[in-house]
Length: 352
Image (cartoon, rainbow, N blue to C red; front, side, top):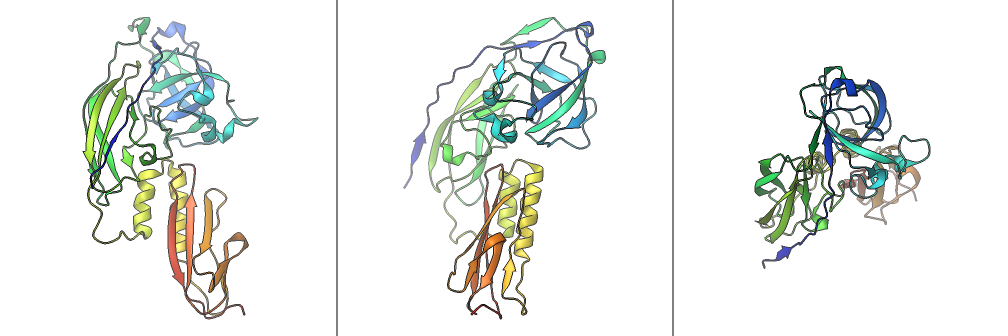
């Protein structure tokens, strides 16, 4: 049976401006920044910064997901003069991605910050770093100010591609001057790594938790660096459910991690844990095994056959009989995209 979902959104947009200046107005300095997009960061002080200012990497903070090697020729593309409160500067509860803004970190929840973008991508996503700003190469021919609205975003098309399961897929869009996008479909279908209801510059369009053979209708927004948005109403239909159930093996979950986990280090650690669990074997000399542990990723293990084995402290799986022991092993991280592998084990030695 076909279903239709209609989402209506009301947006309130704040005015902002972008600064240009001559080199005489800018000075070289080191400033801590909080990266909130591949080419966007927040900084507490924009005094002396101008479009064209050269940016170099000096020191990593925590977390740190900067591109290595750090791109040469990085310069400031835009500087917004609209003051923002750090914890709500990019969606809600931004502090959750920055060690909860605890004492001793570089930013507090109530700090006033400003959004700056660069000419090329320089980070995977959320990162703290100390940048050196040197305006010696800034252009002196630019006008002194440029008011909001000079650059307008347009959206020409938005298309959906099903991943073959009917429950997932991705949106892709074409247009001009697109700096960020806003998805207004069902919240459950939007990856939890991002703040639903907020613009994002780093979402890859991936969707999940869709219903097979279902029609979705929503409003899709794009925005420019000058907060001049555009909207297109989108309708797409998911494919049917596969004739046979999808096998959620390590290959399936590896693709899932590549799609929905937004931090490179997190994805790498999750893949290592999955690989270790997948390679785990019993021994004829022991009545137990131990699932992979991690101090970085969240993990858990559950026995699906409690009469044949149980899970003890630190992930120790204890055999209770010679029957097949089935263990469910789950790993997750900051992207809130958990993966679960299920594996059978046969013990020849077990506790009485």
